Image (cartoon, rainbow, N blue to C red; front, side, top):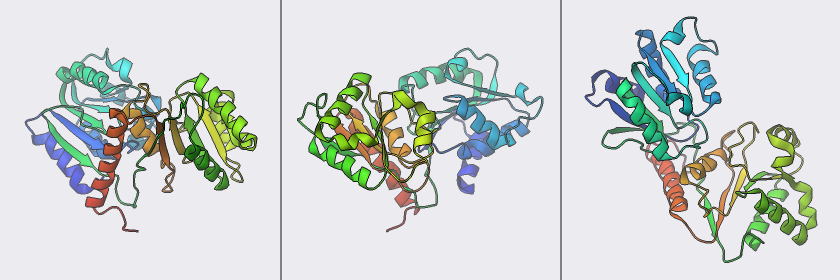
Length: 321
């Protein structure tokens, strides 16, 4: 986060008449944009409530602020908790932050707003740190990804009249062949286990040789995936019905969302999958949404990823190459 952005955030905390703020950043941004403010509040003996998506975020905050070890006694002023725990917090806080950026968004926007409505009366100041505007009628600060030429993978939409419960269009099969040729790691989200089995059966019927590269995530788990991708001499196609970002597998993925128009795929999750394709390094993977029709969630995902890249371009972070 730039010095100018950090200064602007600090000025809001100290001087603004508005008690709440939207801080918008891309998924997986880390706590850099709020770290200085957190440190300032704690150094002035203020009370800080930091609400995270899961335990990984709690450790992320502790590592960034205290090199992994929270100083003794500080727990009186710092409360780190997840969504469920936050619903029962008591006491008052100088600053509350809801971190909607650093973990996969299993909560819908309305659920986040409901929690913030519960926390707000207990907080002198509140920051909704998200990849979208959560709060209405308050100021919004937007933080671009920053400075190494990164970009967000905008999804390719493949619409088809094919019944994708039973088969896939030729274009998807050709993508899979290309990924195998290029020795890529591929993650195919199907939405449920029955669709995963049908997809595997169809691929085996069309081209049995491709099955040498296909792995059902239910049979190996995240640990098994992480072991398999160590073999970089071949492609790996992971088929999963589990909607997760698999951060425990330290590679970028080519991502295919099979049936992206299904109601179970919300734009919040789809946006995170676009960012997951480039999580581990700057060589972003492809993101492909296979659907029979473009839904509002798909359209919103396209618009949000395009906006992230527009901000990067306007701020001068993206190269022209």
